[in-house]
Image (cartoon, rainbow, N blue to C red; front, side, top):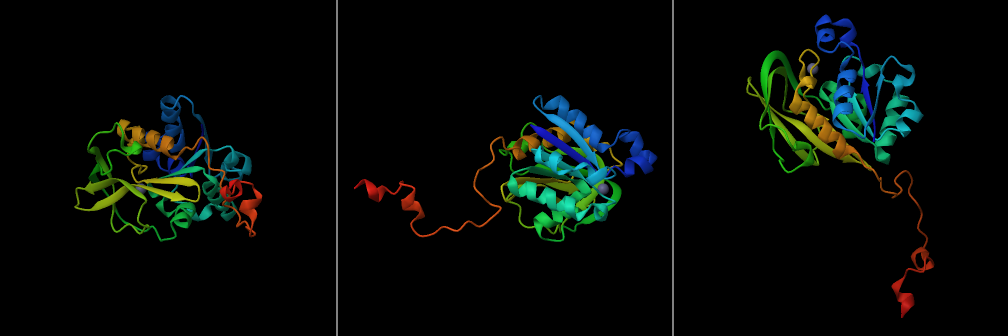
Length: 251
Ligand code: ZN
């Protein structure tokens, strides 16, 4: 299983508070626990500053599951790279969209809506409730998961109805939020997960790591369907009979 973690990697270099929590960057912290917890994983990272943001055709072609964390620089992500990621999702690559990447170019394109939400940075307490407890992404975590302090993300969250809703969060300010949502796009599986604000050590919390590990397993497809989706094939009359599989021939 080949996993690539993409991070814009800006807060960590400019905000000492964030650098204290994630000295090597959020991408490195996520890579560390994925390597520990998924034995078969080949994990690599990519960042905004790298040529092609570290997401060349070769890298994406070899990626089974891509994780995405972005916030300040969504507009700096080149459209050609977004197009390439989009095509790979259509072909079956998994995509896990974390926290403020709800406004990334790739997520808004995949959703087709604004993906806007309410927000507040005020040390709210967040409770993350599984509302689909039999789903593989919800396995093995506390009910609820407690984030002692976190940024509030609240409804209305302008996304299409999720194909599967896994988590709902409540906040000390009274808001609720669809914090874990599954979507199918083309042959790919997409999971949005809202925890992960950069000034709180959210990605060091065992339950949050477990959700992300579960999501990687869910989004990964070892054998992607061979059904052609990148073109509209013509099917001339008689094509099926010509295969010799028409049961009418047997009579
Ligand atoms: Zn945030």
